[in-house]
Every structure is written in structure tokens, then in C-alpha cells.
Image 1 (tube, protein in one colour):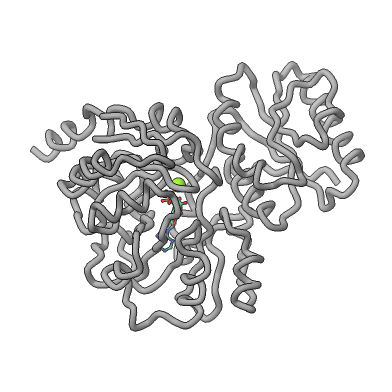
Image 2 (tube, helix red, strand yellow):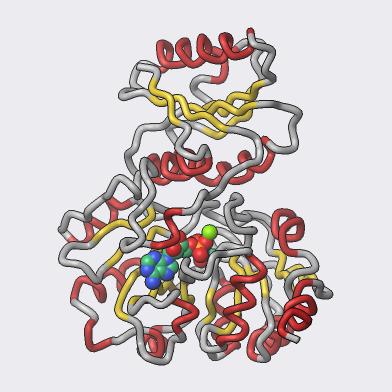
Length: 368
Ligand code: TXA
Ligand code: MG
């Protein structure tokens, strides 16, 4: 009988609702909020990437989120709230420190997720059995109004099948989630194109679990405190299960193999791109079809070699924003291998390198 029920959840009629964020129709969003309150699944836009939303207090709906994403049950979900009053339903507010409130005041609503002690009301399905919960208040008008109308916090993992690049446009979510959820809200391209920054505030020192849309240096400046950056947050190794369970799975990966060509120093871009070119030419001699993920500053060095443009090294916001789209485009091309340039791990460069390294399955080549 249980199997039968699961099958019924697999194929659904999905309603697509196009919503212009600058001209919200609250009546439409009220209908969508009703779907969530009744235990349905809704793909919604945020300022980072699209999320797969469900009522955070509804265990069955939360379980369906894992099922639809194909997400392992030990990888917890972020809870999204729309006002500070909801925090006490989600977290154990007695244990929130001054640092946490300082962060909330400065960065919420926005792309910063906090790991804090969970309230008893949050089901363990949400936190995958952990006593801590990930919480954020998104800044996207559709997300915030939707949660407000739901009158309940909603879980929101990125709305991609587990392991694949996160969706940053309506086209992406329609491709990934059609027939699997009740409603898709299509609000076009998201602003940041990478997920929120996640910082764990339940340890002796704040620890960066995932670099994201807000550079970690900005948070450090505001707190006047160092944030620990483990190698896993740099995308060099998988996090230990204890730190953040989700980090151990392959993430953001195109089907096409991807290699990252890294240097210690990107100040001499001419000599760096010559090394990349040499590496790619060698591979091409073995008959491989290759695409290079390049930056605006280096593109002209590659001559006849095909490239996909990530953006300018002087505008890493642009590179981060394009990254997941570019990773998806690789699979639409007839190539055997993608080779990506590396970026300096400063500001959003850390976020970009985390995603690229993980997308490559740690397929990192040093070409110094
Ligand atoms: O920008 C974002 O954060 C997007 C949008 C939709 O809000 N959401 C998102 O969710 O990226 P997701 O599920 O794709 O990534 C959340 C990450 C996972 O790696 C998970 O392991 C980690 O957060 N996480 C969630 N709850 C946690 C917890 N209680 N402790 C440690 N890590 C947690
Ligand atoms: Mg994700």
C-alpha cells in the first residue's frame, strides 16, 4: 500500500504560474499559499536560486520534498521565514547569541543562512535528525510574500534533482520539476545565481559551511570576528558528516566530465591562459572534443578553441550569476570534456571555486 501512495506522488499535474516580482498579484500568491498549507509542493523563486517549498511543520510534505529531489534522508533542509516573529517557532531563541542577532539585523532579509539550535516544533525530518536547524529570511518579494501568506515557515532546498546544478531560471525549474510538484512559480532569472552563504553559530567559533552569495569577508567585517573556513567550504574535500551532512554528496555536477585548472596566482593572466591552452591542446590531440569555461579577460588567448564565457574577473558577481547556467549548457553541447579556469579565492571567488570544484567531483589539476 505504501508503494502505491509513493507512486501517486511521482506523477502530478503541475500548474505553472508566471509572476512578475515587480508587479505582484497577491490573489495568485494566496492560491499558491493554500497549496502549501494543504501539504503541497511549490517551486518558488528566491534571490539566490529557486527553492522547492513545503510547509516546514508538515512531516509528510517534507518527506515528499526529499523524495521529489531524490535527496538522501540525512541531508537536512533550510527553513525559510518571512518575519522575525517566526524565528521562535523555528529556533530555540533562548540560546541565540548577540552575534546571531547582529547578523540577522544586518543581513536579513538576504542570502545568509544561520545554523542555530532548533525549536522542538521543527520536525526531525527537516533537520535530518540534528538538533540544529538552518534558517534564512529570503529577500525575494515573491518568496517573502508567499511565506507571509502561508503563515508558516517553509523548507526550501534548491529545486534541482540531487547532485545537479541549482536552477536559476524558470526554464531550469520547468525542465527539472514539471510533473513532480503542484505549482511552479516562474519569475524569470534569479539575482545572485548561487545559493546563500551558510554559517554555523552553534560552535565555539563561527564556521563557514558553504560560501555563497554574501562574501564571508563581509560577515567578518560586520562581526569584527574571524570565521573559520574549513577545506570543505573551499570545495577541496568533503565535509565530515558531523559538520554538515549535505556536503559529502557530489553536487552541481554536469553529466559531462569537468576539470578545473588551478593556479596559485592569477595575477599574470597571459601566462596562466597559455598554460591552460597548452593543456587543452594536448587533450585535443587525443581526439577529445573540449569546451573551455573562460573569463572575459582570457577569452582572446584561446583562438580556435571553443569557449563558454563565465564573465569578468573584475565582476565576480557576474561569474557567480552565470555559473549554474553555464554548467547546464555544457551538457547541451556535443563535447567529451569541459575545462574550467580557476579564480582567486577572495570574495565571491571562494563561492565560485567551491561550486566549480564540487561540480568537477574534485577533478582539480594544478598548472603552476
Ligand atoms: O540560497 C539557498 O540557500 C537556497 C534557496 C532556495 O534558499 N537553498 C538551498 O538549499 O541551497 P539546499 O538544500 O540546496 O542546500 C542547503 C545546504 C545543504 O548542503 C545542507 O546540508 C545544509 O544546507 N544544511 C541544512 N540544514 C542544516 C543543518 N541543520 N546543519 C548543517 N547543515 C545544514
Ligand atoms: Mg542544493
